[in-house]
Length: 208
Image 1 (cartoon, rainbow, N blue to C red):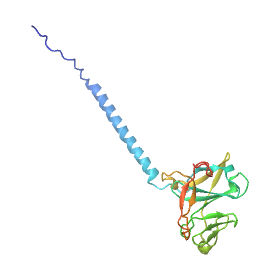
Image 2 (cartoon, rainbow, N blue to C red; image 1 turned 90 degrees about the horizontal axis):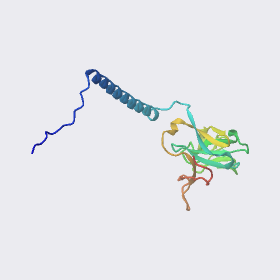
Image 3 (cartoon, rainbow, N blue to C red; image 1 turned 180 degrees about the vertical axis):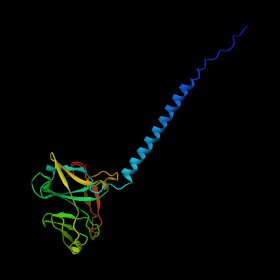
Image 4 (cartoon, rainbow, N blue to C red; image 1 turned 90 degrees about the vertical axis):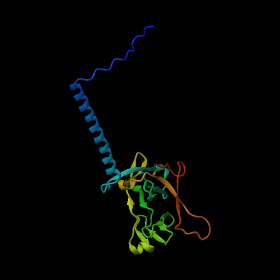
């Protein structure tokens, strides 16, 4: 029985030299563009996270609604890098000037400072450091050393309160928001031993 010789699929014609040249140039251009894009992205990321930010740059972060803060009360806000700030509503107005935001970290040894409305002052329980409503040290080791509490700028926009945070404090990917100090319980506990608990919406404001 006769067998037909096997058939083979026709091979594509080899591109002309001019076509090969165009393909080679296109491939090289795409490779160069890809490398440039990759190195450009790497350089941008390096500049964003490895190089120091320009001094004076700030970013506004949401704190809470103005109407959610009673007059005379204080919220404790934590920035993305873990720093804590006392935000006190001093008067009944709804402008930024009716609030004040001061670092809650005592400049003496780093304990947590809290607002005492009955004494119209900020107080550090570790070594009895005291500060007036503007953050100026008035007693204890901070008063002796003239160490005041750093202040943060605040802004109000459409009834919402924002805090200006230096961009160098935004490099840590921690969620900023409202927190509260939780102290150890029991007799004889050290007032310097404190930890923070993040507030959920409804516990005293909406965390950012």
